[in-house]
Image 1 (cartoon, helix red, strand yellow):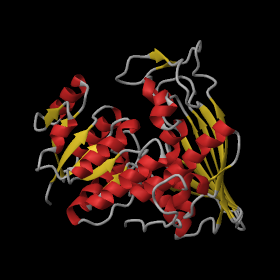
Image 2: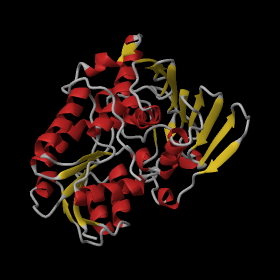
Image 3: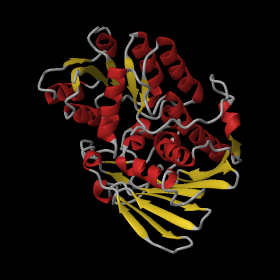
Image 4: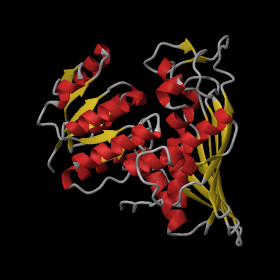
Length: 382
């Protein structure tokens, strides 16, 4: 197997996890890393055994002709500038989610990749997890729910890290954009369609000035989060048309505010056949109950490959498949269009909360640079 020579731009939180996964992959060779933070940069170089060269200016990394592809894990308000530079340097790009803080910047990234003829994969990691691919097969191939009537996602967890930009609407596009593009992507994927309109309610009620939300994240100085303007909780309803709905419940102010509670995530659905699915991602189980036979069945979806990724299930496989795409030039699965689709409901939800109204997805799409084309779900890799 030919090794793919890689550069990483941004080696903090998610960038550090990408580096860890790539160092476990025999098909990857990390030859360069870049970060503005000297401490993080040197730590990353040391993790490669000194084999990678460190750069404080990522433009110097991009000048190297021996680098085939670049992983970018900088804050999303910097995504567009860095992504366009990567494509201008004639390199394939793995870009962390969300793609950008607004739709026009998102579309500029997609168009730049197309013009350069380079690959673009978005860090929608759940599309690469055995757990969710197994769920997709149970729903699409085995028709456990028949036609899906409704879906839901419940994520109640601790806050974002005590880093100011994470809590800024301007720098993230909003907490729902930053966090829930993952979950909207699952809805789109399982339902194989685009939502038509969104209604959302939310506020920042706990992480406020004078509050006492004390947050502890590994590797960061513990701090009270009493700043920012992102919502810390929200309820979001999506109308997918034809009587199909989805609901997302988000809370980012659970206590204790450390990792002892993990990241519990429940995904569920009910079919027209009256059968119900409840999945617990952290436990690795998908359970079906009810329906005409009232038969109950639990599927153990734990997977060794998923377990290797500390941050999210699928974290190893997304790297494996991206590297294979670089070698073979086949299209990526979670490409720019899939990434864009995951963000449309998020932008709509943020606007719905801000303006107190139902927001049509077409209204959001009209603000972009790409034509308003029908939703098209790509085939899932085997």
